[in-house]
Image (cartoon, rainbow, N blue to C red):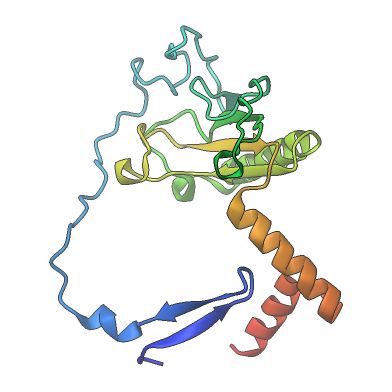
Length: 203
Protein backbone atom coordinates (compact mmCIF):
# COMPACT_ATOMS: atom_id res chain seq x y z
CA UNK A 1 0.00 0.00 0.00
CA UNK A 2 1.10 3.57 -0.65
CA UNK A 3 -0.56 4.95 2.47
CA UNK A 4 0.86 5.07 5.98
CA UNK A 5 0.36 2.02 8.14
CA UNK A 6 2.07 0.08 10.90
CA UNK A 7 3.63 -3.26 10.11
CA UNK A 8 4.39 -6.05 12.55
CA UNK A 9 8.02 -7.09 13.02
CA UNK A 10 7.88 -10.65 14.43
CA UNK A 11 11.60 -10.75 15.21
CA UNK A 12 11.30 -7.82 17.59
CA UNK A 13 7.64 -8.38 18.53
CA UNK A 14 6.87 -4.73 17.85
CA UNK A 15 5.26 -2.47 15.26
CA UNK A 16 7.00 -0.22 12.72
CA UNK A 17 5.54 2.86 11.04
CA UNK A 18 5.66 2.63 7.23
CA UNK A 19 5.02 5.90 5.37
CA UNK A 20 5.49 4.80 1.77
CA UNK A 21 3.97 8.00 0.36
CA UNK A 22 6.90 10.04 1.71
CA UNK A 23 9.32 8.67 -0.89
CA UNK A 24 7.65 11.01 -3.39
CA UNK A 25 8.70 14.16 -1.54
CA UNK A 26 11.54 16.25 -3.04
CA UNK A 27 14.92 15.52 -1.49
CA UNK A 28 17.12 18.42 -0.45
CA UNK A 29 19.29 16.58 2.03
CA UNK A 30 22.86 15.42 1.82
CA UNK A 31 24.04 13.55 -1.26
CA UNK A 32 26.95 11.15 -0.91
CA UNK A 33 29.68 11.15 -3.54
CA UNK A 34 30.39 7.79 -5.18
CA UNK A 35 33.58 6.09 -3.96
CA UNK A 36 36.74 7.04 -5.84
CA UNK A 37 37.48 4.86 -8.85
CA UNK A 38 41.21 5.49 -8.84
CA UNK A 39 42.03 3.21 -5.89
CA UNK A 40 45.48 1.69 -6.54
CA UNK A 41 45.57 -2.09 -6.77
CA UNK A 42 48.47 -2.22 -4.31
CA UNK A 43 49.75 0.53 -2.06
CA UNK A 44 52.65 -0.10 0.33
CA UNK A 45 51.19 2.57 2.65
CA UNK A 46 47.84 0.77 2.90
CA UNK A 47 48.03 -1.33 6.10
CA UNK A 48 45.69 -3.99 4.68
CA UNK A 49 47.75 -4.71 1.56
CA UNK A 50 50.03 -7.76 1.29
CA UNK A 51 53.51 -6.98 2.58
CA UNK A 52 52.45 -3.66 4.16
CA UNK A 53 53.22 -2.64 7.72
CA UNK A 54 50.25 -2.19 10.05
CA UNK A 55 49.91 0.41 12.83
CA UNK A 56 51.25 -2.01 15.45
CA UNK A 57 54.45 -2.59 13.45
CA UNK A 58 53.53 -6.06 12.18
CA UNK A 59 54.14 -6.77 8.50
CA UNK A 60 51.39 -8.56 6.58
CA UNK A 61 52.35 -11.71 4.70
CA UNK A 62 52.21 -11.51 0.93
CA UNK A 63 48.85 -13.24 0.94
CA UNK A 64 47.14 -14.27 -2.30
CA UNK A 65 43.65 -15.15 -1.02
CA UNK A 66 41.87 -14.29 2.20
CA UNK A 67 43.87 -13.04 5.16
CA UNK A 68 42.64 -12.97 8.77
CA UNK A 69 44.42 -11.19 11.62
CA UNK A 70 43.57 -9.82 15.10
CA UNK A 71 42.20 -6.27 14.97
CA UNK A 72 44.96 -3.87 15.98
CA UNK A 73 42.40 -1.65 17.74
CA UNK A 74 39.82 -4.13 19.09
CA UNK A 75 36.54 -3.11 20.69
CA UNK A 76 36.60 -6.38 22.67
CA UNK A 77 39.50 -8.22 24.29
CA UNK A 78 39.53 -11.72 25.81
CA UNK A 79 41.29 -10.65 29.01
CA UNK A 80 39.41 -7.44 29.84
CA UNK A 81 39.21 -6.75 33.60
CA UNK A 82 35.98 -6.85 35.59
CA UNK A 83 34.24 -3.45 35.88
CA UNK A 84 34.17 -1.73 39.25
CA UNK A 85 31.28 -2.53 41.57
CA UNK A 86 28.60 0.11 41.93
CA UNK A 87 26.24 0.51 44.85
CA UNK A 88 23.21 1.57 42.78
CA UNK A 89 21.21 -0.60 40.32
CA UNK A 90 20.85 2.29 37.85
CA UNK A 91 24.61 2.35 37.36
CA UNK A 92 25.28 -1.34 36.87
CA UNK A 93 28.09 -2.67 34.70
CA UNK A 94 28.91 -6.22 33.68
CA UNK A 95 32.05 -7.85 32.30
CA UNK A 96 32.48 -8.02 28.53
CA UNK A 97 35.13 -10.16 26.89
CA UNK A 98 35.62 -11.06 23.28
CA UNK A 99 37.77 -11.20 20.18
CA UNK A 100 37.90 -8.87 17.19
CA UNK A 101 39.44 -9.94 13.90
CA UNK A 102 39.82 -8.38 10.46
CA UNK A 103 39.47 -10.45 7.32
CA UNK A 104 40.79 -9.21 3.97
CA UNK A 105 38.81 -10.69 1.09
CA UNK A 106 41.46 -10.27 -1.60
CA UNK A 107 45.01 -8.92 -2.01
CA UNK A 108 43.87 -6.19 -4.43
CA UNK A 109 42.53 -2.91 -3.05
CA UNK A 110 40.59 -1.97 -6.19
CA UNK A 111 38.10 -4.85 -5.89
CA UNK A 112 34.88 -5.28 -3.97
CA UNK A 113 33.18 -8.57 -3.16
CA UNK A 114 30.73 -8.46 -6.13
CA UNK A 115 33.62 -7.95 -8.57
CA UNK A 116 35.56 -11.00 -7.40
CA UNK A 117 35.43 -14.36 -9.19
CA UNK A 118 33.09 -17.08 -7.92
CA UNK A 119 35.96 -19.22 -6.53
CA UNK A 120 37.32 -16.13 -4.71
CA UNK A 121 33.89 -15.36 -3.25
CA UNK A 122 33.51 -18.99 -2.20
CA UNK A 123 36.85 -18.78 -0.38
CA UNK A 124 35.55 -15.75 1.55
CA UNK A 125 32.34 -17.58 2.52
CA UNK A 126 34.31 -20.67 3.59
CA UNK A 127 36.55 -18.46 5.75
CA UNK A 128 33.44 -16.86 7.32
CA UNK A 129 32.10 -20.31 8.17
CA UNK A 130 35.42 -21.40 9.68
CA UNK A 131 35.64 -18.26 11.82
CA UNK A 132 32.03 -18.58 12.98
CA UNK A 133 32.63 -22.21 13.98
CA UNK A 134 35.98 -21.54 15.65
CA UNK A 135 34.88 -18.49 17.64
CA UNK A 136 31.39 -19.85 18.28
CA UNK A 137 32.93 -22.70 20.25
CA UNK A 138 34.10 -20.15 22.86
CA UNK A 139 31.63 -17.27 22.60
CA UNK A 140 27.80 -17.17 22.45
CA UNK A 141 27.76 -14.45 19.78
CA UNK A 142 29.78 -14.11 16.57
CA UNK A 143 29.03 -11.24 14.22
CA UNK A 144 30.59 -10.84 10.77
CA UNK A 145 29.96 -7.48 9.15
CA UNK A 146 31.32 -5.18 6.47
CA UNK A 147 31.18 -1.40 6.69
CA UNK A 148 30.97 0.26 3.28
CA UNK A 149 32.18 3.82 2.79
CA UNK A 150 33.51 6.54 5.06
CA UNK A 151 29.99 7.51 6.17
CA UNK A 152 29.61 4.03 7.71
CA UNK A 153 32.96 4.20 9.48
CA UNK A 154 35.06 2.36 6.92
CA UNK A 155 38.48 3.99 6.95
CA UNK A 156 40.09 1.83 4.26
CA UNK A 157 38.91 0.99 0.71
CA UNK A 158 40.63 -2.40 0.72
CA UNK A 159 38.00 -5.21 0.58
CA UNK A 160 37.66 -6.45 4.15
CA UNK A 161 35.22 -7.16 6.97
CA UNK A 162 35.14 -7.26 10.75
CA UNK A 163 34.57 -10.37 12.86
CA UNK A 164 33.49 -9.79 16.46
CA UNK A 165 32.90 -12.53 19.01
CA UNK A 166 31.52 -11.55 22.41
CA UNK A 167 30.73 -13.09 25.78
CA UNK A 168 27.22 -11.61 25.64
CA UNK A 169 24.35 -11.32 23.19
CA UNK A 170 23.85 -7.76 21.88
CA UNK A 171 20.44 -6.23 22.68
CA UNK A 172 18.99 -6.76 19.21
CA UNK A 173 20.14 -10.36 18.99
CA UNK A 174 18.86 -11.09 22.50
CA UNK A 175 15.44 -9.69 21.64
CA UNK A 176 15.25 -11.64 18.36
CA UNK A 177 16.40 -14.83 20.09
CA UNK A 178 13.65 -14.47 22.70
CA UNK A 179 10.98 -13.85 20.03
CA UNK A 180 12.08 -16.86 17.97
CA UNK A 181 12.12 -19.18 20.99
CA UNK A 182 8.63 -18.02 21.93
CA UNK A 183 7.36 -18.58 18.38
CA UNK A 184 8.83 -22.09 18.28
CA UNK A 185 7.24 -22.90 21.64
CA UNK A 186 3.81 -21.62 20.55
CA UNK A 187 3.71 -22.85 16.94
CA UNK A 188 6.15 -25.77 16.81
CA UNK A 189 8.00 -24.40 13.78
CA UNK A 190 11.00 -22.03 13.54
CA UNK A 191 9.84 -18.48 12.84
CA UNK A 192 12.26 -17.75 10.00
CA UNK A 193 11.45 -21.03 8.27
CA UNK A 194 7.74 -20.27 8.43
CA UNK A 195 8.36 -16.70 7.29
CA UNK A 196 10.36 -17.88 4.25
CA UNK A 197 7.65 -20.38 3.33
CA UNK A 198 4.89 -17.76 3.62
CA UNK A 199 6.93 -15.24 1.66
CA UNK A 200 7.50 -17.77 -1.15
CA UNK A 201 3.76 -18.45 -1.37
CA UNK A 202 3.02 -14.76 -1.79
CA UNK A 203 5.30 -14.28 -4.81
